[in-house]
Length: 269
Image (cartoon, rainbow, N blue to C red):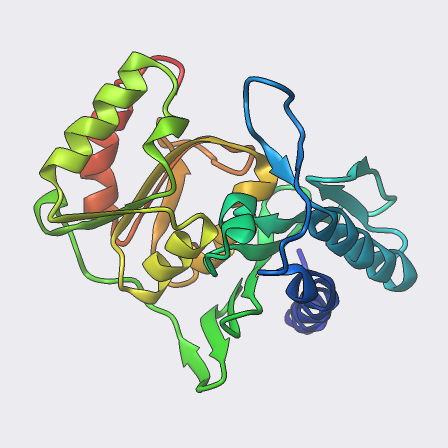
C-alpha cells in the first residue's frame, strides 16, 4: 500500500505527464492533421501522430523518473517494470472527437498499484480542465481554481441524465436491447462525450454512463475520479471494470443497482 506522501508525489508527477502530453496534442488540435486507420478497410479506428507522439513523451518522462515502473499504453503497448506499479495511458481518448475539432477528448493517465488504479487523471488541455482522483478525494483543476468533485444524489433511472459516447459500440442484440431499455427510462440522454462524460458524472452534472467495448486504458484513469467523488463504477455484472469491456458508472449505489438489474441480464456482459 502506498503511503499518503507517496500518493502526493505520484499524483503531482501524473500532472507533469499531462503537461508533457498537452505540449504535443494542442498544436495538432484543429490543425487538419492526417489520420490513419488502425483497423483497416471495414472498421474506422483513427489514430494520429498526436496520439503516438504524446504517449511517447509520457513514456520518456516515466522512464527518466521511475524506470522501475511498468507502462501500458494504447499506442505503444506494454513494458513490464520491476515494481508492481504500472502507468496505464491513453494519450487521446476520443480520437474521433479530436479529429472532428470537438473538445471532449482527453488524455487519460492512471497509476495501477498491481491490484487496482489508485490515481487517475483526465486532462482536457484545450478547455483547460483536469479531473484528478486519488485517495482522499477527487477534484477539478481549472482556470477557475480547484473544486472538490461530488456526484449527484440521483437514485433512480427516472430522474437520471445518461451519457454514452456512441450507441454503435453495442454490437450484439442483447446489449443493444439493454441499452434501449435503460435509455427509455431516463430523463435525458446525451451522446458523444468519450471520457469527458465520466468526469461530468463525478462533477454531479451527469448521473449515469453506460458503455461497452472498452479497453483497460479507456477506464482505469476514470475509476479513481468517479469513486473518490462518491460514485460507483463496475462491469455490467457488478464486477471489477479495470480490464474494460462493458462498464456502467453511476452517481449513487441506488442508481447503479437499478441499472445493473437490467444490464446484468446480458449474456457475457
